[in-house]
Image (cartoon, rainbow, N blue to C red):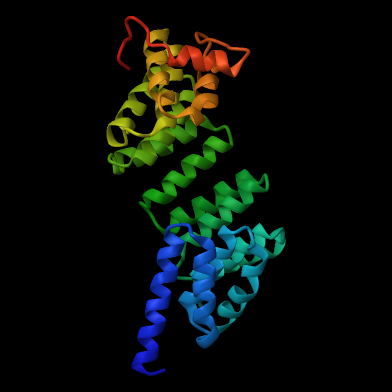
Length: 282
């Protein structure tokens, strides 16, 4: 391939990648397909095409190009996406087998462990998923992302105390990560530690003020603590300008033992749209 062809391919792939990032999956698939017409073995074109097809819900179509690319090279990223596609196309046994092979590689490719654990958990084998993440942590001591995954797995397995322990350690190691804070706060909320959860949610919201889900969960904590006015103020800020959040806000009110229940969504919306005379700041 000469320099001119290289430049044309690079430009085409750049356009495809930008379309993929913008979630313009049709355009990304079309551009990656064009690249593959003249450069059939280009690894980046295959990856973009596969991601775009998965985004379009055409996961089964992504399997063949990924399988060919996996045969050509020892590429754990390609193999991991292939495992994901196989599971997504309801070939779960094949997908799990592929992910186990990739996870057995050394040096370890950690995303393969994460994908394998997630697929096992999605199939109801949460304990097995936890074991996979623990294996990965043994190979990559101190990985914050793996600690976060382990904490999430423990939450899914309803092991709240273990989740809090793991996520607290992750927060100590990476105090500026709102994803860790929100996961820890959720584990604390589920465990009934409402004051601790409220404090953790406030820290998370300080880093990410527009996180409406965290603000709604903060409202649950406040109402459970008997601070109904502050909780309802938080929910009004969640609902204001976001009508799609009505269900979440109404659920937050109904879920609390000190909350409110509305039979009609319109009644909940009317209540949330009303500004109280005196509202506490959450």
